[in-house]
Image (cartoon, rainbow, N blue to C red):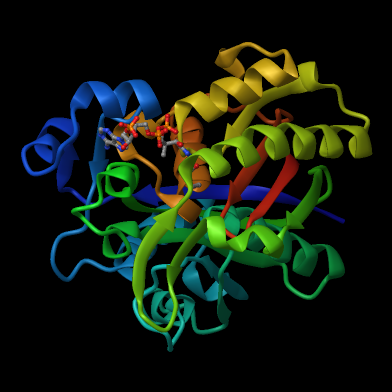
Length: 310
Ligand code: UT7
């Protein structure tokens, strides 16, 4: 038995905040943000808009795309660090809104690597025979975690959600390798007893990403015996276009194998990979049999890659 993605969906808030908008209240500029990160705009939740609301909309689209009903879903996993409440978990709120009464529900906290972690859990459930259909969602309202007066952080992030329906299949293929280094956890933090905003040593995170992401991609390729040329797309967490370019360079591959959408959304943390996957799917860029590598990295520090077959 193997696994396959049956449907994808995504949702971002309607409100758009451009670099120029930010430069009206912060000592920053469109030029600085674009050249250092590749980001031009981000979608930001308004007032009472929550991670679960974005997640529900993304999930409905994924179910529709998969031609499945909510009551067929046996587990809902939400990767998030900006969920609606400490408890109940965001997955349970999504369950209630969808009417997915047969699903077990829980959230996974692995920051920007969260979707890869959640996806690997869903895959393991299906491979073991425990569940047949699992909804995996990355949903974030990162705007609630940033200090909007801290130009070194707030310009980077955006809000959104992406969802996939994972199910069993005779033909699919999937291998994941996950890693963490808690010893470096302090380079990227949020919350804690003082409920602090995101604090980040940007350069340290940058160096970590450009070293560990290619290593983890190589690891997955070696384990599967698939060559890098056989991979149609490398769908990387969308944090900074310079990180993606550096990874492509280290792997000796052209940038057209590395789709980028962060200019529109910024860094949506756990949501960035499924949002990009949904755009590729809906843009009819994916054909049955295509091999893809999804790769995440972020707070923890955590990182991981998964090879899937479309
Ligand atoms: O999802 C995973 C989480 N995060 C990441 O992946 C982020 C990884 N890191 C990065 O993407 C980059 O390190 C940043 C985009 C965060 C920063 O880029 P950088 O090239 O490393 O810039 P820097 O931190 O070295 O800052 C350079 C200068 C500094 O000024 P001085 O000290 O040279 O005078 C900063 O104060 O740019 C200044 N600066 C800004 N200037 C205008 C920092 N933020 C801004 C800003 N606008 N928004």
